Image 1 (cartoon, helix red, strand yellow):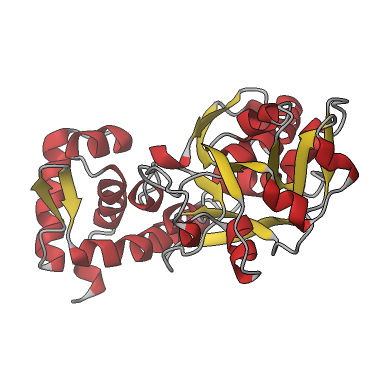
Image 2 (cartoon, rainbow, N blue to C red):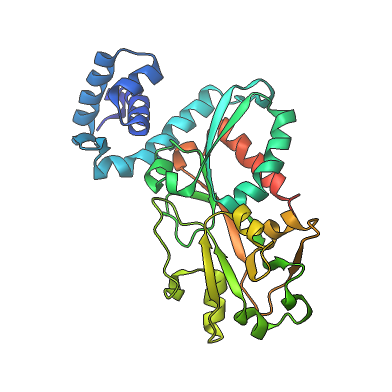
Length: 312
C-alpha cells in the first residue's frame, strides 16, 4: 500500500468510529453527515480488507483486526494532533468537562474528597461522574467511554496504561466498650464476630460464601496461611457502612488504614493494628491507550497523583 494513496482523514474517522461504535454518533462527533461517515466506513473496509465494525445484538462491535488497530490508530492520530497543535494545553480553570471515573467505595471515601477540594479551586466547572466497579467493564474502559478506573487489580489487560496511587496497610476498628480492647490478640480476634468489607471487581458482582476462603481477599488469605479462620457475621461492599457497624459491641472491622483513619476522631471506636501480618494493598489508576495523549486526561491524572501524596 502506497501512503500517498491513503486519505489520512480516514484514520481520524476510524479513531472516532472505534471509540463510538456507532456511525451516527461518530458523524456527530466529527461534525459531518451520517452518509459521509458511512461512506468513510466503506472506504476504511476496503483499505484494511476487513469489515472493522459488524452489527451484533449489542450494536456495532469491532472485529479482531479492528481491536488490534485501535490503540495504534489512536497513537497515530494523537501524534498528528501534537504536530499540528504542539502547544495545545488543557485550560482547567475555564474548562467545562465531565470526567467519568470508576472507583471502589474505599477510594471514593479516601481519595475523592481531597480531589474535589483541589478541583473546586483549580477547575470549578469540571464535573466528576463517579461510577462503581460493578457499573463498568474493561470494554468500557478500553474504548474510552470511562476515563479512569481507580481500584486494586489482580490482573489488567496489557494494553491498558496504569500507575500506582499508593500502598496501604490494615487496621482494626471496634467499639470502645468491646471487652476485647484490654486483651487484643490473635486468639481474641478469632473468637470475635467480624464484618467483611471489600468491593467486587469490574463488572457485575456476585454474592459471597463464608466457606470460600480463597475468594474472600487479603485478610482471610493472611489468616489461611496461619491455618486460622475468622467468624464473619456480615458481608458488605460499603466501607462507610462497615465503619458504622463498629459501634456494635461484638464486631470487629478489619480494613485498609486510610479508610480506618476517617473515624479516628470518633470517641466511640478504637483503632488498632491487626494482631497478625497482612500484606499491604496497592491502589492503582488505569486508563485506555486511546486517552494516553489527551491533554485533559493528562491533567486529571497528574492531579490525582499529586493529591494522593497528601492522603495519609
